[in-house]
Length: 174
Image (tube, rainbow, N blue to C red; front, side, top):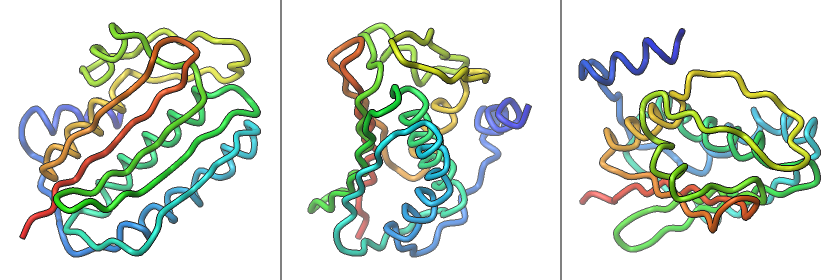
C-alpha cells in the first residue's frame, strides 16, 4: 500500500526533495548495515568498495530508499553462496554507484519492463529460496527518485542466470 501511495505522489508531482550536502559513503554504509542480516540469512557474500568519501547534494531519506531497494533486490535474486558487489566510482562529471550480483540475470524484454509501474518480472533460476511479494513498484519509484536528483539508473545483464548490474548515476553540478 505504501508503494502505491508513493507512486501516486510521483505521478502527481507532489514529491519535494530536501537536498543538502551529504556524505554518500556514510549513506551507503548505513544502508548496507541495515541489509547485512538479509545477506547473512541468505548466505550471500557482500563485497564493498567505496573508496574516499564523496559529498554530493541529495535528499538522504529518499536516496536511502533507492539504495535499499536496489541492494535488497540483488540479494533476493541471487542464489545462496552468490555475491553482491557494491562499488562507488567518482568520475569527473558524475558519480556511479554500481550494485552487481551473481544472480538470475535479466533478458532484454525484462530489462525493458523493469522500471515501469507494476513492472514485476517472473522469477526463475535454481537455488532461489525466497518468495518476493510486491506490486512491481520498487524500481519504478527508485527510478523516479533518481531522476528527481537529475540522475539515471542503468541496468546491464547478459541474460538469464548471468547476473545483473544496476548503476545509479548522479551527475555533478557546479
